[in-house]
Image: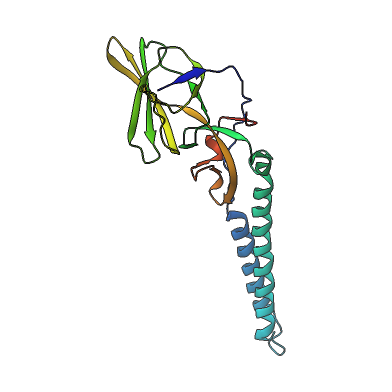
Length: 217
């Protein structure tokens, strides 16, 4: 498989995933129930509050609680986890160990084998995890361009691919590590479990797993 070294750098852009907890709103609801109970105990027995009034109070509180949840979600979408604006990431390339899309244009890989290795193989897998190719690349480290070509000169078909390194010393496997590859971000989704980035070709990864961000070459 043809790989070639490249010298372009990338700025580190680590980002934590963000969610929100319902603990605060739950505490507010308990406070509301205590107030409602106190109101029932101290109302005038000759002029009790009508059931419709209680229903209005409950509906009002439920609306406020829902609005609070909505505001938290909007804040998350605007850029949770340190205030990062994930919308600005769309159209950029992120370094990820998730499968990335290949359609003929070289894919930049970050190679970092075990320091003790005297032999290093780059293992290429399909989007479903099937091993497609193994290439001896030597013990060096840094960025390389993966062109998707086999040793016989044929090119792999368009699709999703992921990569691992097998580091060996004296023929013995000493480490197997995932390889970071740069994929194009096409979408960012937001949920209670945090922000998830969608890559070209349909692959995805949590924003917290992205270790670098760059403009497309």
